[in-house]
Length: 277
Image (tube, rainbow, N blue to C red):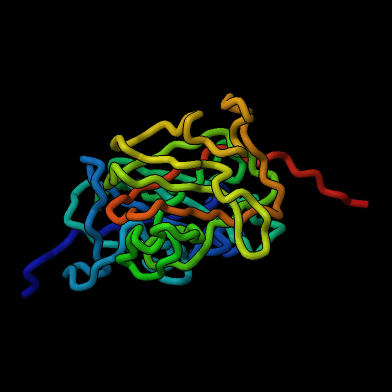
């Protein structure tokens, strides 16, 4: 007889048309699900009712999807959970990337018996939120900030994933908010755009930033990079990506080994004019 019998959750993640087709949710490997208990702590998740195999949290949707109908299944000891979903689009599909990138949805106070188990990701919402987990490039589920100790690294979307965060053209960044999970008082980090083929600003969004308050920290003028402020330190009205400088990178200071957290990049997609001539 099983010693543990965990609560079963099954959620449907759909487009605003209530469709879960591949056209509307183009890449379940680029959709991240985060589950928290009523105290706002990350829930411990499992892939089976008996709890024999743990599921990373947050996790990439495909890790808990049955592969055909976009139903996310997981098991938890928590009787009530809050669920947030972040869509990172599909950077390989450049024509539709902007339609999906930065979409988010949430469902609060979910129980195994809840009738409403649909999370809707709308294409039409003006506000987009890009969650940036500060995990660097590690693909191991236990990746730690030690892997970006004094080294430039591509940001990835979730524990155990190698999928990079790539911005489409026309995304207007209007604000940045930080979430500290574990602080490191002596450590700072930079956040910006750059890789081997892009000439971006490595510290263009955040420069020598530190998340020293929990859970949220407003990343204001003192830490904003050159893309978000003018030379005299006055905030400017955001930054709009151009599609050429697009890969998000992070670099921690020397000795950053205990810090964990997230940066939320808040903005919206500008209207796109299509040439039909």
